[in-house]
Length: 85
Length: 141
Image (tube, rainbow over all chains, first blue to last red; front, side):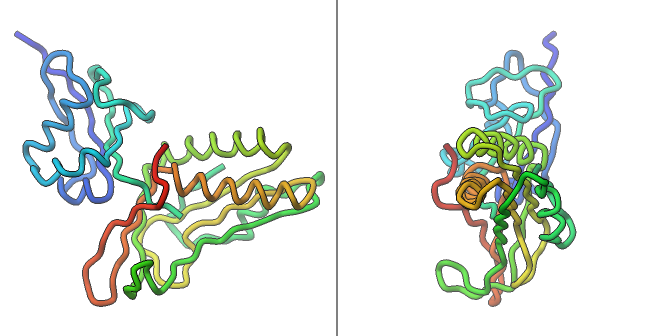
C-alpha cells in the first residue's frame, strides 16, 4: 500500500478565484513533484491550464521549478504574474 | 522591513522607521490608487492581495541589495491589501541616507524591485462593473 504525500496548496489572485479557494490540502501519489500538484488542480479546473506558462511556483516560501520534488507536509504556492505597487 | 497593512497606511509612520541621527536625507515614495487605468477605463478602486511571508522576505532581499548598491541606507515599506478606493495610499517606501543622492537612488530601486518581485496582486475594479487582475510590466526575474 502506498502512503499518499500530503501537501498544502496556496493559491492567489486569479488562480484562487478559479479554484474557489485560497488554500487546500492535496493527497498526491508517490514521489510527487510541484507539477503533480498543479495537474491535480488543473484536472478539476481546466481553465487553469492556459495560465500555467505565466504561473510560478514556490515551495515552502521559496521559488521552485515545476519539476522540483515535494515531500510530505510541504506547502506549495502558485503565483500569477505580480501586480503590486 | 516590509509590512503588509490591512488598514490605511500612515506614511509618517513608515518614515519614522528609517530616521536616524546619521541620516541627512529621507525620500518617501507614495503609490496612490488612480482613477483611470492604463487602458483608459475608470476604476472605483483596486483590490490587492499578498503572499505575506514571501513578500516580506523578498523585500528583505531588495533592501539588502539596496544597501550593497547605495551604501548605508535605511529602507522601510508598507503595502496595503484589501479593497482600496481612488485616492488611497497603496504603498509607501521610505529610504533614509546620509545624503540625498543615495536616498533618491535607493528609494527608486526599492519601489521598482518591489513592483517587479514581491508576490502581491492587484485587481482593477471598474466603474461599469467587473474587474481584472493586472500584472506589472517587467514581471518576474
